[in-house]
View (cartoon, one colour):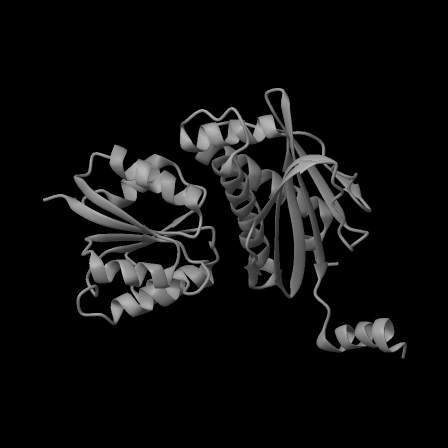
Length: 123
Length: 177
């Protein structure tokens, strides 16, 4: 069954790259939805059910860690894999994301292969 | 001065971050040219500027500067589609490059200087403009060669003023006391 994905990043450039990498991967990817912050992500999730979320951390309105916190408190999204893809590479931020329940963490810059490697086995 | 905040360390951090971003995100190698320390970088009178900063115990303001042709090359490599003129996607690409380069410098520095927050990148494109920053010291100018084009990263890092110092500066400037 194809995996629907939500990509959350305030940078249109990064969203475009991630969508391309996902579609070019060997994974069975279905719909890829986009959101530019945590608020838009939660709104999107009310309309679309997804099996994977890729999220930035630094975003306006609601950042990636606040989004992660809300997702992990939601029965529907508690077990959905959430990967943080961000320029924030400090140990403090990584630990914060892990403690909130992030499935994985990847720093920008990244290569397409690194994304594929991180997501391998999900679909 | 903290060794990490010294210009040589800062310049090396910019070099590492810029090389990593170009090679990993664009598949392009850039050659780091000798960096300079300047009281104020030469006026940039045209082209594309990606502006970004970060703040915490230390504050930085930074600019990624390049020609429209270089910006189009960056966008070509980032999106894998050709760009012959500066359009939204090209400006987005420069903003994201500034975000990643300076974001990685911030991460490097905050291992030594404490946590800092990155600002939102802004891009300026045009001709006959003057960029001016109110800080007249401590600038590191790191040029990079990519083919025939040059991209420069300008960064200035200074300790953040304490609330008392800020109040004193405000009093002097506005209350004349």
